[in-house]
Each structure stands twice: as C-alpha cells, then as structure tokens.
Length: 279
Image 1: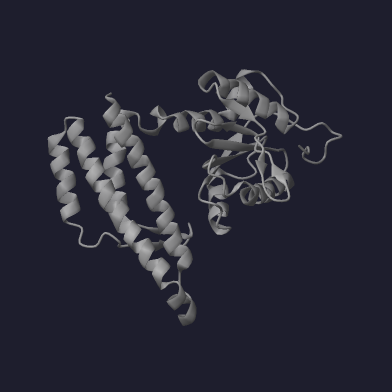
Image 2 (image 1 turned 120 degrees about the vertical axis):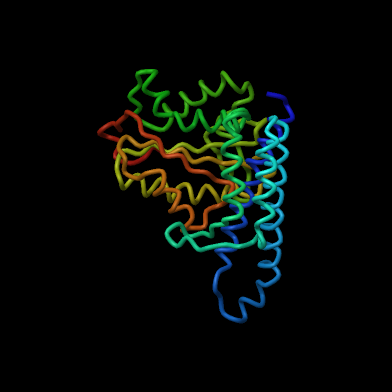
C-alpha cells in the first residue's frame, strides 16, 4: 500500500477521533439555565462549526481514499451519500452512553470501515502498534508463563515487548508540576504516548485504580511532549468490562487524551500485600 494511502488513513482515524470529542463537548454543554446558556453560546457555536468541518472532511477524505484505491464507483456512491445530507450537524442523544450520536458522521465512518480493511488502518501506525501491545498485556503475561504479584512485573514485561518495536521506550517518565513530580509507568517519546498500569485482584482495588487514574489525569495534563495517555487496568478477574470503564470515563468527563484498556490475565497478590503496591 502506498504511503499516501497510509497517511490518509491515519488522518481519517484522527478526524473521527476529533469529531467524537466535539460530540462529547456538545453533550456536556447540554441544557443549562438561560444565563449559563448565553455565556456558553459562543463555545456552543464553535463546537457546531467544528462538527460540520469534521463531517465534511470525513466525507471528502473517504472519497479520495476510495479513488486512490481504484474504486471509482464507491467514490461516486460516497459523493451521492454526502449530497443527500442537508444538515451536517444533525445529532441524536444516546442517554445510556452520555454523549451525542451523529448520523452523518456514522455514514462516513461506515464507508471508511470498509476501506480500512484494505489499508490496515490504525494498525499501520506506530500508535496503533503501541495500543495493540497494551491491549494484549494479558496474552503477553500468559505467553511468558508469569504469575505477576504486582504492577511492576506487568510493566516490566510490557516495556520489554515494546522495546522490540520502539527503541525509545522509557519508564517512569518525570512530569514536573509546581509542587509535585508525576511518573507515568511507560512511554514512547517518538509517539508522545504514555501508559499507566494498574494491577487489580479485587473489586475494591478496581475502584481504587480508577480513582488513581483520575488523579493521574490532572497530574499529567498540560504537557506538550506527551499527548496520548492510556490506562491499562490489568484484572485477574472480570470485575469490570471495557464498556463499563469507558462509560465511567464519560460520566466523570475524563480527559479526552486518555484511553482505558481493560485486560484479563493471570496473577495474584502476595497474601501480605492486601493493598496495591506504592510506586
């Protein structure tokens, strides 16, 4: 696959990500008092503007991708689908997910999903590889026949595997704030991506892990050199599902730069260690 198609695919992935963030922002602005509504009208108008921009861009770039892949008929179909849409900012409420849904954006995304299988989509990017390794933490631990007793053993295994793909993988990156220095567990400097690992063996620890992640979000925010953050919640039993944690992130209005990954794998804490290990 040519580099141009790969770059266009990566750009589309980013477009859909940014559009979802705008939809979430519109939902969060939500029904307010008259005074609050007037104060936020400029912010609302700006969000609507960006939503229209991202939907238009998604259709344009998906059409270009179809043409570059030698699919002129699909390119024409995509153009026809766009022409039928009168309002690019139409949204509906998804109350269970605490966000808005954009049907125009979904139409463009459906076309992209069909083409993404031909370009290998996000998996061709460095960030995609980084994410895949994190999401397979449980399989990595099993393949190494490990029975981790703490977070350190999981972090070490992940860093070793990441090292095969990224020579610039680092550990415990210092992020200095005015009163405290924070240390994300794993990072790849070239990707500007960092990950925090939580080891969970009970439901109580799962709740504590989420609280710890929310605190980390505040500590890691506002740093240009680190733009993408991941919370790897390694559970020895399915105390929460991926969907549970994603919904919790939306409820607490978690930083949009953070993505949670719930993984299952072997392990158990030492009997003496009833609480998560401190770093």
